[in-house]
Image (cartoon, rainbow, N blue to C red):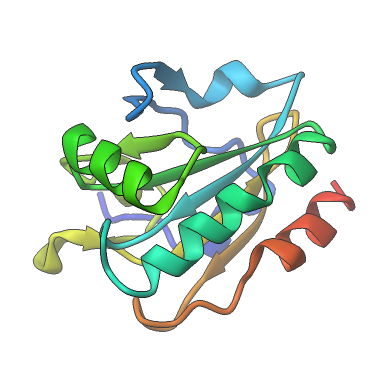
Amino acid sequence: MSDPNPSDLIGSVAPDFTLKSHQGDTITLSSFQKSKNVVLVFYPLDFSPVCSMQLPEFSGSSDEFAALDTAILGINRDSLHTHRAWAVEYGIEVPLLADMNLSVAKAYGVALVDEGKSKRATFLIDKQGLVREAHVEGTTGEYTFHPAEALERVKLL
């Protein structure tokens, strides 16, 4: 079975997953249903230049998202140990999830298996667990969907 096209997920139930976060929690996406929207942020690698701008920006906006009943989850294939070190160095306070075998990235159609990482992509998931928007960057070095735009889109959910 081939990986889905991310845009084909829009309007569908978001692929569920359970992963560990660098904060010590085990997070299941479906546990947010009925209580929170989710901004699911796939990013290629901890400590890379663009990711080191993107995730701190989303983390710095977490209070604004929380005011809209919205959780932010960062996800990539790095280990929990690497996530912890990166979060400390860059002041990232949102959960960073370890998708070490890229199974979640594959389910969302954003895995770059040959490169051993995911595309840079942001999915907006509503309180019913439906994917409402999918923003996939053209290259892993691009970062065009910023927290301010995500906040405006979340207000429409």
